Image (tube, helix red, strand yellow):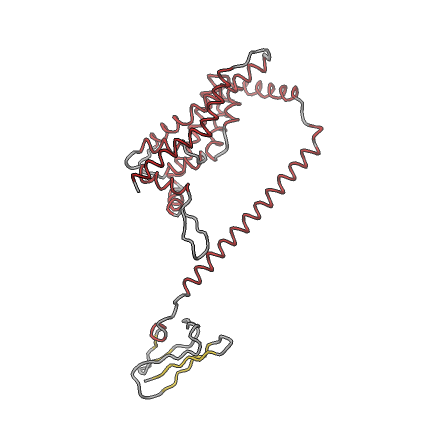
Length: 335
């Protein structure tokens, strides 16, 4: 038989020799440095006594032990380093932008328009939009739908709708634009982005990046995982809970678009329940502001101010409490 002798020098270089010696039925491996493992491309092909190639498992059964773990640790550290660099770059760019904006505002502080100039400009804009009639209303609906579909905050825009078009037409335009924008996101997510969204939901975990800690799921991912479990048994309730959750509107629309039990009709009903009360409130605020612009002597609207305070407190405390209670109850059920 042949005895394969592996010799390693002190610098870590590998030398492979095949010495044809008689006597012995096994292939003996003699590394002078046992802590160095033989890789498949470190040595030329090994031959047995018949001239056939010997694979690396026969030459060194311990090949690869610890190598995968080392490579995985290196990759994790590399990913963490890349994310850290990206975050630092984002912070630098954000700080630079804010600093530049503050500088521009400071340099142009004397050219800031006065209150009367702002009121005059708004009245001119309102007059031009109102003169366009239904065409102007249609343009407004399309613009609001676009903002809703890409995740831009629509509260100030809806207030402008009530300011420009009045209470009735403003609420109609706000409702139509908000719901059509949400439905657009829903159909785009279900038709074109379904595979990407589902892959994100399946891999909604965050790695700490060291050997001692395991991958941990964030609170957002835990809520989404619980929604995926409950949506089959309670589609309407789960959809409503997700609509009132702390996620941005566009994220909620995309998540619901890939959940099979959520049809477009259910999505429309749940979105209406969650979004239309806010649209009505913003429309009333805009309409009240327009009235006060034309007649500054109007008394304070205590009811409207109370509604604004209540909806603010509900958004800060009520919605998180509702979602937390639902999450706690369903977590016990599916524990």
